[in-house]
Image (cartoon, rainbow, N blue to C red; front, side):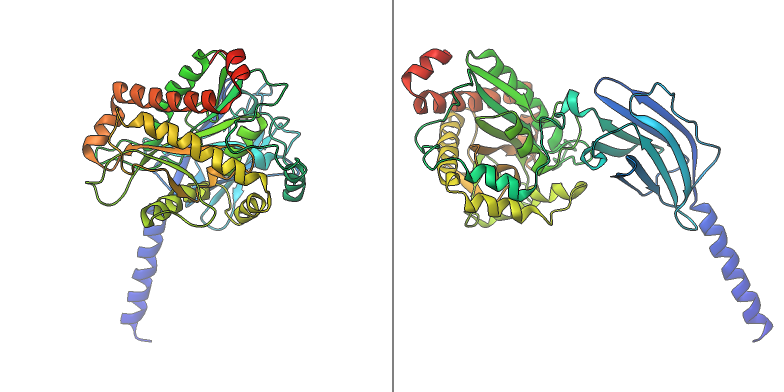
Length: 409
């Protein structure tokens, strides 16, 4: 090999070494924050980078992999009185990536933790672990049962328990319980409007207004599926509704398509045989894809299978359509309709086998004028009122007169 090539290779290796060093990220600080709602980890970085966060058991721990990173100084340990964090340790995952392990003070399954992770201001990796009891539900409220056990419980209900034209109220229940689901949240912002508005912000605002209206009505109670800006898996949204013994699940969203001229509100129920339109099929795929944020979709067809196997699902589906029609009627005077009939698609959040469920697309956030509407408190209030009035009309028409009178509807 000539000296020319030796010098050339040497210079290339030196350049690659310099570039690799230049891309390295320093972690210069770590802070711990605890509140009644969540426990927060804040990593101070010298530059933004890629990362991965997941939980494991035996022992319960949170694992954070940060690409091309190393510690500028030793990790500060959490206070011994911290409610969740026990200790923190770190090591190289490979030659360039850093793995940080946070041992947790958990006796239960750490993989059920609800958490979000975001890089804020380009130089802060913020990880929030949400208090299940305060914000979502305790493990006692959301039992982690096998699919076989879940199917057995559903199938054990006598046929005819659910009647298509009558809302079913358990004898022990003195209020109608509505699970209000604000779509997306946390690291899943949902769709973005042309002005940068995130769907998760709009859905939460409308959901809060709807919940307030429900709670102001005698005989009704609202359960917020998420109470803050954090992500809840799609299957967990259904579990939360079922654990609360909800009589209805309402999921709030804001539509988005590539054609920015399309506008209008829509109401969806579950389709078990295919979407009613190509747009509905595409929309369902995009909404369901949010479950990929931190949950595998590999087991989702098991849930659908249990729905199809259970005869009570037929009555649940018909009840869902009845609710959706009532809501759609109330949209006529306050919003332009994208479709004047109830649409059907395979949204995961609608797949409860025993709770009537609807998904409301409040407008197209991808349309500039409708994005402005969605940002308007006046429009949000009108939308919440229309949904509420539709829900109340459904129960007034579906429950026996004695129940309507007793509930004060």
